[in-house]
Image (cartoon, rainbow over all chains, first blue to last red; front, side):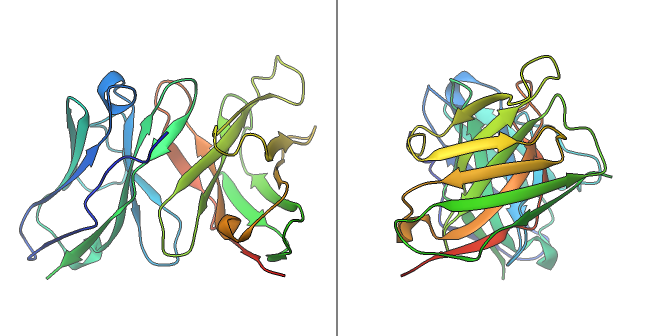
Length: 110
Length: 125
Protein backbone atom coordinates (compact mmCIF):
# COMPACT_ATOMS: atom_id res chain seq x y z
CA UNK A 1 0.00 0.00 0.00
CA UNK A 2 1.38 3.41 -0.99
CA UNK A 3 0.03 6.64 0.43
CA UNK A 4 -2.46 8.58 -1.66
CA UNK A 5 -0.84 11.52 -3.46
CA UNK A 6 -1.69 15.06 -2.39
CA UNK A 7 0.04 18.35 -3.25
CA UNK A 8 2.29 19.49 -0.42
CA UNK A 9 0.70 22.92 -0.28
CA UNK A 10 -2.14 24.97 -1.71
CA UNK A 11 -2.73 28.66 -1.10
CA UNK A 12 -5.31 31.25 -1.98
CA UNK A 13 -6.53 34.69 -1.09
CA UNK A 14 -9.36 35.07 1.41
CA UNK A 15 -12.68 34.71 -0.39
CA UNK A 16 -11.26 32.63 -3.20
CA UNK A 17 -11.91 28.94 -3.84
CA UNK A 18 -9.17 26.36 -3.70
CA UNK A 19 -9.13 22.69 -4.60
CA UNK A 20 -6.98 19.94 -3.14
CA UNK A 21 -6.48 16.80 -5.19
CA UNK A 22 -5.95 13.29 -3.87
CA UNK A 23 -4.77 10.70 -6.35
CA UNK A 24 -4.91 6.99 -5.76
CA UNK A 25 -5.36 3.90 -7.88
CA UNK A 26 -8.07 1.62 -9.17
CA UNK A 27 -7.55 -0.43 -5.99
CA UNK A 28 -8.64 2.34 -3.65
CA UNK A 29 -10.22 5.64 -4.73
CA UNK A 30 -11.12 4.35 -8.17
CA UNK A 31 -12.95 1.31 -6.84
CA UNK A 32 -14.86 2.64 -3.84
CA UNK A 33 -16.94 5.68 -2.96
CA UNK A 34 -15.41 5.64 0.51
CA UNK A 35 -13.24 8.74 0.49
CA UNK A 36 -13.06 11.01 3.51
CA UNK A 37 -11.26 14.27 4.24
CA UNK A 38 -9.84 15.60 7.50
CA UNK A 39 -8.79 19.05 8.65
CA UNK A 40 -6.01 19.30 11.22
CA UNK A 41 -4.88 22.43 13.02
CA UNK A 42 -1.47 22.52 14.73
CA UNK A 43 -1.22 20.24 17.75
CA UNK A 44 -4.84 19.17 17.39
CA UNK A 45 -6.54 15.96 16.42
CA UNK A 46 -7.85 15.67 12.85
CA UNK A 47 -11.48 16.58 12.26
CA UNK A 48 -13.75 14.83 9.78
CA UNK A 49 -15.09 17.29 7.20
CA UNK A 50 -16.17 15.07 4.28
CA UNK A 51 -17.10 11.39 4.12
CA UNK A 52 -18.38 9.03 1.42
CA UNK A 53 -16.85 11.39 -1.17
CA UNK A 54 -19.43 14.18 -0.90
CA UNK A 55 -21.20 14.08 2.48
CA UNK A 56 -20.64 16.65 5.23
CA UNK A 57 -21.01 15.80 8.91
CA UNK A 58 -23.41 17.91 10.90
CA UNK A 59 -21.82 21.20 11.88
CA UNK A 60 -19.27 21.33 9.06
CA UNK A 61 -19.46 24.44 6.91
CA UNK A 62 -21.03 24.07 3.46
CA UNK A 63 -17.96 25.88 2.12
CA UNK A 64 -16.34 22.44 2.11
CA UNK A 65 -17.30 20.10 -0.70
CA UNK A 66 -15.96 16.84 -2.08
CA UNK A 67 -15.98 15.09 -5.42
CA UNK A 68 -14.36 12.21 -7.25
CA UNK A 69 -13.42 11.37 -10.81
CA UNK A 70 -11.72 8.11 -11.64
CA UNK A 71 -8.78 7.56 -9.32
CA UNK A 72 -8.72 11.15 -8.05
CA UNK A 73 -10.77 12.71 -5.28
CA UNK A 74 -10.93 16.44 -4.64
CA UNK A 75 -11.77 18.76 -1.78
CA UNK A 76 -12.90 22.28 -2.59
CA UNK A 77 -12.93 25.08 -0.06
CA UNK A 78 -15.11 27.96 -1.21
CA UNK A 79 -14.75 31.45 0.19
CA UNK A 80 -11.42 30.69 1.83
CA UNK A 81 -11.13 32.07 5.35
CA UNK A 82 -8.17 32.49 7.69
CA UNK A 83 -9.61 29.82 9.99
CA UNK A 84 -9.35 27.30 7.12
CA UNK A 85 -5.56 27.36 7.34
CA UNK A 86 -4.15 24.02 8.39
CA UNK A 87 -3.35 20.57 7.08
CA UNK A 88 -5.82 18.50 5.10
CA UNK A 89 -5.71 14.74 4.64
CA UNK A 90 -7.64 12.48 2.32
CA UNK A 91 -8.38 8.87 3.17
CA UNK A 92 -9.77 6.00 1.14
CA UNK A 93 -10.89 2.46 1.68
CA UNK A 94 -8.30 0.21 0.03
CA UNK A 95 -9.94 -3.19 0.14
CA UNK A 96 -9.50 -6.10 2.55
CA UNK A 97 -10.88 -3.92 5.35
CA UNK A 98 -7.88 -1.56 5.22
CA UNK A 99 -7.74 2.19 4.68
CA UNK A 100 -5.00 4.46 3.41
CA UNK A 101 -4.27 8.15 3.95
CA UNK A 102 -2.81 10.81 1.73
CA UNK A 103 0.41 12.56 2.63
CA UNK A 104 -1.37 15.77 3.58
CA UNK A 105 -1.71 19.27 2.10
CA UNK A 106 -0.92 22.50 3.90
CA UNK A 107 -3.48 25.19 3.15
CA UNK A 108 -2.49 28.83 3.48
CA UNK A 109 -4.70 31.89 3.19
CA UNK A 110 -2.48 34.59 1.72
CA UNK B 1 -21.33 12.39 24.30
CA UNK B 2 -18.64 9.84 23.49
CA UNK B 3 -15.12 10.87 24.42
CA UNK B 4 -11.78 9.22 23.77
CA UNK B 5 -8.62 9.73 25.80
CA UNK B 6 -5.27 8.15 25.02
CA UNK B 7 -2.57 7.48 27.57
CA UNK B 8 0.85 5.90 27.48
CA UNK B 9 4.41 5.91 28.83
CA UNK B 10 5.69 8.83 26.73
CA UNK B 11 9.16 7.32 26.30
CA UNK B 12 10.02 3.83 25.08
CA UNK B 13 13.47 2.36 24.53
CA UNK B 14 14.23 0.39 21.39
CA UNK B 15 13.60 -2.50 20.91
CA UNK B 16 11.10 -2.62 23.78
CA UNK B 17 7.31 -2.92 23.58
CA UNK B 18 4.99 0.07 23.33
CA UNK B 19 1.67 -0.19 25.18
CA UNK B 20 -1.05 2.43 24.86
CA UNK B 21 -4.55 2.74 26.29
CA UNK B 22 -7.56 4.58 24.93
CA UNK B 23 -10.35 5.21 27.44
CA UNK B 24 -13.80 5.32 25.87
CA UNK B 25 -16.59 7.04 27.76
CA UNK B 26 -20.12 8.26 27.23
CA UNK B 27 -21.38 5.89 24.56
CA UNK B 28 -21.77 2.44 23.09
CA UNK B 29 -18.77 0.39 22.07
CA UNK B 30 -20.64 -2.05 19.88
CA UNK B 31 -21.07 -1.74 16.11
CA UNK B 32 -18.13 0.59 15.57
CA UNK B 33 -14.59 -0.07 14.45
CA UNK B 34 -12.24 1.24 17.16
CA UNK B 35 -9.04 2.32 15.51
CA UNK B 36 -5.47 3.40 16.15
CA UNK B 37 -3.84 5.95 13.85
CA UNK B 38 -0.40 7.48 14.24
CA UNK B 39 1.41 10.56 13.01
CA UNK B 40 5.22 10.87 12.99
CA UNK B 41 6.51 14.35 13.85
CA UNK B 42 5.87 16.72 10.95
CA UNK B 43 4.44 13.95 8.79
CA UNK B 44 1.11 12.52 7.69
CA UNK B 45 -1.36 10.08 9.19
CA UNK B 46 -0.90 6.32 9.13
CA UNK B 47 -3.71 3.86 9.84
CA UNK B 48 -2.57 1.13 12.21
CA UNK B 49 -5.67 -1.03 12.51
CA UNK B 50 -8.95 -1.61 14.28
CA UNK B 51 -10.92 -3.92 16.51
CA UNK B 52 -14.61 -4.50 15.89
CA UNK B 53 -16.98 -5.88 18.45
CA UNK B 54 -20.51 -6.63 17.30
CA UNK B 55 -21.72 -7.92 20.60
CA UNK B 56 -22.20 -11.39 19.16
CA UNK B 57 -18.58 -12.41 18.66
CA UNK B 58 -16.12 -13.28 21.36
CA UNK B 59 -15.17 -10.50 23.72
CA UNK B 60 -11.88 -10.15 21.93
CA UNK B 61 -13.55 -8.87 18.76
CA UNK B 62 -12.34 -9.02 15.18
CA UNK B 63 -9.13 -7.21 14.25
CA UNK B 64 -7.61 -5.93 11.03
CA UNK B 65 -4.14 -4.41 10.75
CA UNK B 66 -2.11 -2.34 8.33
CA UNK B 67 -0.14 -4.99 6.40
CA UNK B 68 3.09 -3.06 6.99
CA UNK B 69 2.65 -3.25 10.77
CA UNK B 70 0.74 -6.50 11.17
CA UNK B 71 3.69 -8.54 12.44
CA UNK B 72 4.34 -6.13 15.34
CA UNK B 73 0.94 -4.87 16.40
CA UNK B 74 -1.92 -6.13 18.54
CA UNK B 75 -5.15 -4.19 19.12
CA UNK B 76 -7.57 -5.37 21.76
CA UNK B 77 -10.27 -4.31 24.22
CA UNK B 78 -11.19 -5.27 27.75
CA UNK B 79 -14.34 -7.14 28.69
CA UNK B 80 -16.00 -3.96 29.95
CA UNK B 81 -15.53 -2.41 26.49
CA UNK B 82 -14.39 0.86 27.98
CA UNK B 83 -10.74 0.59 27.00
CA UNK B 84 -8.94 0.08 23.72
CA UNK B 85 -5.37 -1.16 23.76
CA UNK B 86 -2.44 -1.01 21.38
CA UNK B 87 0.66 -3.13 21.77
CA UNK B 88 3.59 -2.72 19.41
CA UNK B 89 6.67 -4.89 19.79
CA UNK B 90 10.27 -4.21 18.76
CA UNK B 91 9.88 -0.44 18.44
CA UNK B 92 12.41 1.68 16.58
CA UNK B 93 12.80 5.46 16.23
CA UNK B 94 10.55 5.20 13.14
CA UNK B 95 7.66 4.41 15.50
CA UNK B 96 7.95 7.79 17.20
CA UNK B 97 4.99 10.15 16.89
CA UNK B 98 1.53 11.00 18.12
CA UNK B 99 -0.83 8.04 18.48
CA UNK B 100 -4.56 8.67 18.15
CA UNK B 101 -7.48 6.42 18.89
CA UNK B 102 -10.52 7.06 16.73
CA UNK B 103 -13.99 5.73 15.96
CA UNK B 104 -14.52 4.35 12.47
CA UNK B 105 -18.12 4.51 11.31
CA UNK B 106 -17.84 1.09 9.71
CA UNK B 107 -18.07 -0.53 6.28
CA UNK B 108 -20.61 1.88 4.81
CA UNK B 109 -18.39 4.90 5.41
CA UNK B 110 -14.91 3.96 6.66
CA UNK B 111 -14.63 7.47 8.04
CA UNK B 112 -13.27 8.50 11.43
CA UNK B 113 -15.82 10.76 13.09
CA UNK B 114 -14.45 10.86 16.60
CA UNK B 115 -10.83 11.25 17.71
CA UNK B 116 -8.91 11.41 20.95
CA UNK B 117 -6.41 14.21 21.52
CA UNK B 118 -3.51 11.85 20.92
CA UNK B 119 -0.55 10.79 23.00
CA UNK B 120 3.06 11.47 22.03
CA UNK B 121 5.46 8.54 21.96
CA UNK B 122 9.21 9.09 21.90
CA UNK B 123 11.49 6.18 21.05
CA UNK B 124 15.00 6.68 22.34
CA UNK B 125 17.61 4.81 24.29
